[in-house]
Image (tube, rainbow, N blue to C red; front, side, top):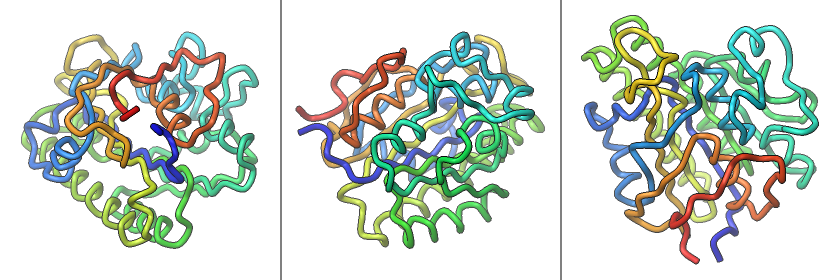
Length: 266
């Protein structure tokens, strides 16, 4: 059976694109060795945080979910026709433990709907990682979404793909390793689908355009039914379909999201 996971954890690295192969990222490389993935996952256009994170959590493109950085910074998201994956899981499993630990606070304030009982934290990446690891060990969440932001900050400051940027990406890889270790310490590794990806990349000192460096991101997933070494074709907006499939919950009929072929053992 290709579903049957009790836990799904998605770690999103803001601005990481598919630059990980140029950085010291042993944890991400190990995930690719053990799981399935792509270096050419297409993100949303424009390649801006709210548009891309929105697609990753809602399963539709920006023309449908309508989110922008200004909007998510000013009001909560609520759309009965296009709910986030958090709201769908809560509707199907009222008692599920759900978490959103994000450095960029507009995700929690302006994308994840209000009053869902989602455990939320924000803070700098290193501090956030300690909170994430403690949360995993103590609460064993059914779904946890993580967003790290310092990598995108390094891209804006020093330039995407530069030495300082790649150093920041290497630090983020260390956070990924700590989170994966916490999953093992919590005793839930066997029943966890573990995903690491990015919202967009960057070119020069910015993003928002359609260069390959901006629009293509890496995606990798590891789990007991994931085909090791499989190269999959997907877009960022497909991630909610993967999450709900893993949890054996029905897909939203209004999604553009599709389950990538060849990812899971049948």
